[in-house]
Image (cartoon, rainbow over all chains, first blue to last red; front, side, top):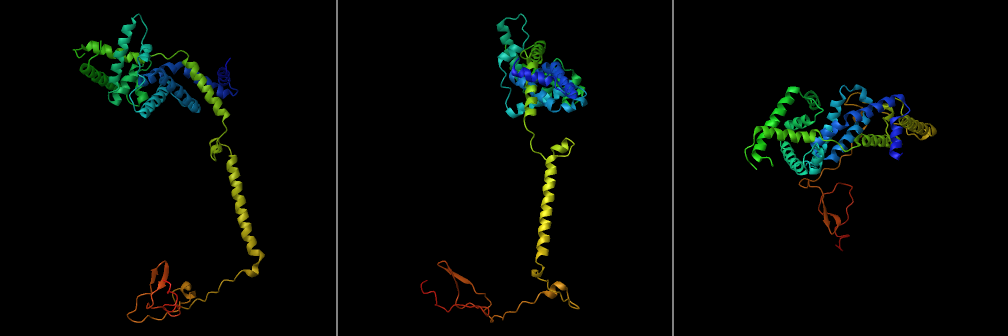
Length: 191
Length: 166
C-alpha cells in the first residue's frame, strides 16, 4: 500500500461523522461525473492532460466549498459550470487556439471499431480541421455546439450551465451548425 | 479540395467531429487520480499552520485569540499613557506655570484679541526708499547693499569693513 493510498484511506474514512458524509458525497460525485466533466473539458482543450487537470481542479474547488454541497440542487449542472469556467479561464490566459490539438488525442478519442489505421488517421485530421472551424464561430454558438457534443448533457442542462433558456440553446446550435456548414463549403473537407 | 459537398456529408462530418470530443474517454484510473489529489490537498491543508488573521476566529464564530491579545495590548497602552500623564501632573505641582489670567475688556472683539499685545511699530521708511534691503550674493557670501534702507536697530557692518578679500 503506497503512501498516497494510505492518505486516501485516511481521507475517505475520517473520524467525524459529518465529514464522512461530505467525503462520501465528493467520492460519489467523482465516480459519477468525472467522465462527463472530462468530456466537457476536452471539448475546449482538445488535450487529454489539460482536460484531466481541469477535472481535478474542479473537484479541488468542490472540496473547498464542501460545506455548500447540501445547498446544490443539480450537481451535474453545478460541476459542468465549474469545469467550464476553469477551461475557459485557462484558454483565455493562454490566449491561443487549442495547442494540444494533436492527432494522438483525437485518435484516442475516436471509438476504435474495425476501421483500418489509415482511415482513423484521416478521420482524425478531418475532425481536427472541423473543430478548428468550430473555434472560429462566435462565442455563444461555439459554447452551445461544444456542450451539445457531450452526450451526457441534455439541452436543458446546457441551458442551465450557460445561464440561458433551452430555446436559446437550440437556436444557437442551429446557427452554429449552419455557419459551420458554410465554412466547410468554403474550405472543403479533406478526404 | 473545394469540391461541392452534399449537405448530408457535411452534417455527417460535423457530427463525427463533435462526437470525437463528446465521447472522448479519459485515461484509465482518472477517478483514482482525482481522489488521490483530493486526499493530498486535504492532508496538505491540515498540515499547514493556520495563517495569522484577526478575523479567522470571527469566521469560525468563536472569540479570536489574536483579537483578545490585541485588545489587551490596547488597554495596556491606554493605562500606561494615562498613568504617565497623571504622574507628571501630581509629582511636581509647584513647577507648573499658572496660566495668565485673562482680562477681558468691557467691550471689543473678544478675549483672544485682548490678550495679544500689539507689536511695536517700526519707524516708517524715508519716502522714495520703500524698497527693502536685499542681500547681494557674491562668491557664496550674503551681503547687504550699502545704501539699502534698514529698519532701526539693525546692526550693519560699515561699508568695506570685511569685503576687502572679496
